[in-house]
Image (cartoon, rainbow, N blue to C red; front, side, top):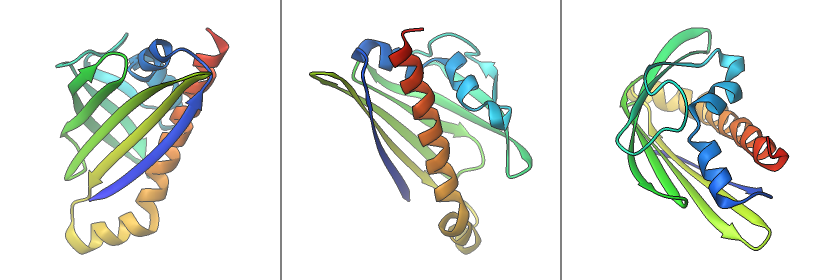
Length: 151
């Protein structure tokens, strides 16, 4: 299993950061370069515990679909989405929000397993982990910018 751990400090209230991180609409903005869009389940607004969304996007030149469900939520400190269908063997993304004196520390714990045994492992080592980390970093910058701008 591969883990990506990121910390992003945001100079904004914890509730705002939490809501922006679970916004379907902002997610689509942050992944516009992959043409990602919500095509089934919750397709707009703020996703809630027990709800699912299916994303369609183009990665590595191939159109792909990924369905996730929000399996845990503790407002405004934590939520977790887990893959129910998609290209990964498994995927779990924990979103953690810690209140700090001058803002919010947003933490991502992103766990995934790749299929295809050795071939998947080599692809993950050479390309996929860096690609996934960059996607998460870019998404976090969009959340940070939206939260700090107050829009």
